[in-house]
Image 1 (cartoon, rainbow over the protein chains, first blue to last red):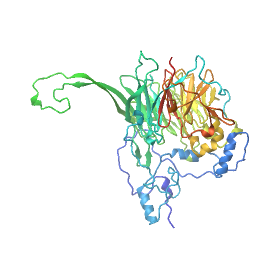
Image 2: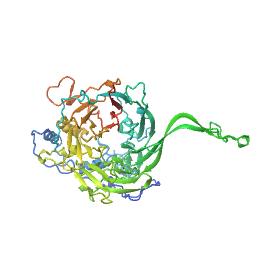
Image 3: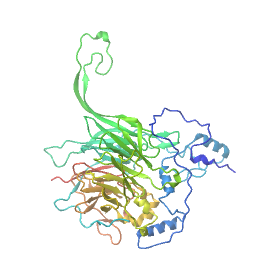
Length: 144
Length: 458
């Protein structure tokens, strides 16, 4: 039975051996660094009346609920906003990755779901999941 | 939920009548091919204060600046064309090792400083770092050095027998961009706005939860002036979506939220402006509330009028004009694409409901403009209450061709020349538009092309 990675996956890893490259940073005085993101629990969906009224919005809502019955009652609440705040976060921690690989031995690590931006569950980001980051070496076509 | 104060009069086209503007195609910049590289996606468009310069930023972190050529007095068919003036790489992709966080190089906003000397200055920002760029011209170079050859090689001092005075000689114009200040490491979350204060010394930068105040000369210090981060992140209910300084009052700024509210803050009241001075919010009919209500009420852009008396907000389906003296409802509401209300389910599924459209005023604050889908953009005349839908397309390519108004058929029988809602291309979105500060020249960005339109000059 594979051991699931520690819950700290979505936060900075708590075990020490991995030391980030030291780099001089110019940090303005008033700023305090705080970890962003956190473990999000989905909000329980409540039953809503299916109101296919005159309002097109309500009809659209009913359509959506029919397709995704587990959708939370408050879309503007934390789930949606947390996803927005997490935009762009891609964790690749070589320590976690190697530890998980060692535990899994020859089995495949769970790979990213269709939404590669959200790290969920057992998924550990792998180098393959991360898109290539390269700066634009070419001049913009607007200037062509 | 939405004010019916001024319903759009869709039957009266903009064109016709003495005072109405006839928009003509002027130029288009960018590649023709449909296969768009991600780096080429335009992410911001901004005229400078005189309108002579037009800057664009893209997802690849590059800035391209166009300059309007001097009007040809003999051939005044149209105002000067915009040609490339300077282009440079503003931001590079970065990796925050401490958080395992990738930082995109996409330019979120560009804001020009008013011109103080021969050089031009602009602020450009990505998600995390703001940079002050100096764009300067060089049109002469020194020649006749005693110790250097013309190609730069050093001469043997022993071969120098006479002395001469170096002189400046004209050369081909060279435009150089250099980063003068880098304002980094002050934002935990993603920067969505920058705004230069009317004191021309300070500016603000806003991310999802905080707004910081900077001095243009000082990069190692930043004052936090708004912080809406809750002590417990589970209680997070709204984020900051845009912020702007008042054009005349250097102590006043506004910020909009994902819940459709705008807060006006006065920096004289306290150092930390967590408590607003004014809260602008339109009351909602609770019986109209749906799953989508909050998402479509999220404000994607806020812009003060040039006069400073009004501000405009853009939410998913409408543009609202607010009088700063009245907090309880907007004075004008314009529907941008109301026909999308019955498509919200699929727009949620394809994420289009989260698209962030911007809006802009014309120089006299009489007309406002915003983008839509299918490469359509909309203009609303506040005085005549007329509106128009135009399309940015290479099909209307001939200069001085007057653009034909477009119409979307919401339901029922589609008339000739109308396009039905289901035929709209939701991948062709116009999120960024800009209006020349003085003239009727507009810049409209499609995904990877920049269109320039002008009013017809007879």
